[in-house]
Image (tube, rainbow, N blue to C red; front, side, top):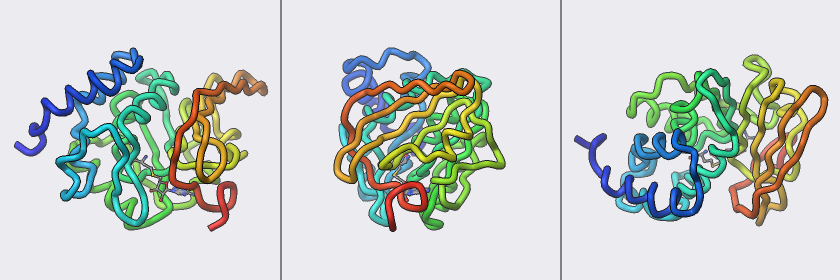
Length: 216
Ligand code: SAH
């Protein structure tokens, strides 16, 4: 009952906030129609889950605005056989969307209680191809590398070098890069030793903390 609830709100979110603003990838749109975002926010925010904004999820962290989730996912250009790494699990919502589009996903979260929440949320909605690892994501996840897609969902002063090293041939990496207050969405693509870099506009994320991110 709860899983099926709020479907009308969710479909309206996808049409008015995401498709209307230019996200065209049908696989991304249908993943966002399917995953019940309201089950990834604290109960007191469930009625706001389909609003056009980020929301607090506890421990000073946030679940990103739905449109930004869609844009970053589309930029990754995932195909069903892909292996994906996300840094910054938060609620687990972005990882659930990635799980719908790729073969396997590893998502790394620094705060143990937040990682536990992401695990519980993912289990509740029946996503089984996403692993939540607790640790410092600025060093990536060497034991699972290389990855076809890497998504950093926290603000970083520059793309951590270990993550670039963990990109597969033809792999894509998407990240908010800039200052603590404002970042730009960056996509890196690997072709052999050559990394191309494209920019996709301003965003605001909570900081990526640790060795290759911001000082704690
Ligand atoms: N993708 C999430 C939102 C991310 S919020 C969602 O869908 O809800 C950013 C998250 O990055 C926070 O949970 C924060 O604790 C985490 N984070 C910050 N620095 C990190 C690091 N070095 N390694 C892993 N996670 C980190």
